Image 1 (cartoon, rainbow, N blue to C red):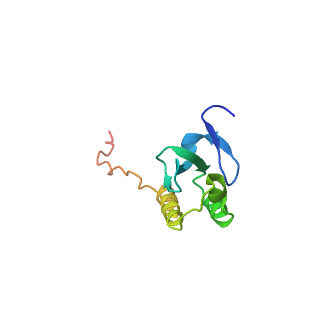
Image 2: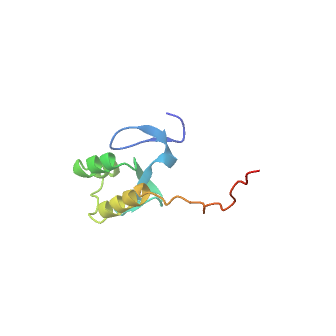
Image 3: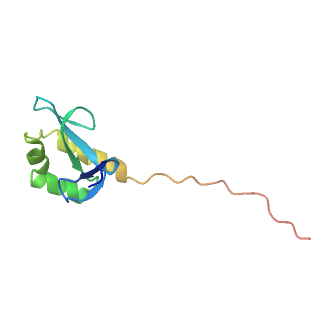
Length: 102
């Protein structure tokens, strides 16, 4: 595996770590947080299938070796909804410059 690649705990896909969400068990504690901190990390694809499987089979809990708080799952689902919601497209106003004949 290349140096900056990580593996999803759910689907086992290998990709650069920027493609994943990072879930961290802070060092010497049982506190679990998202994205920041030093300690044991697990990576998860930002995908509904991976998130559903990780929740159902406790993949994050086993990878981090700590019980995952129930409050973490709604945060991950909200993050997924925010990342998959369509962004509004910029629409240019109609041009009033009609071609002239002649």
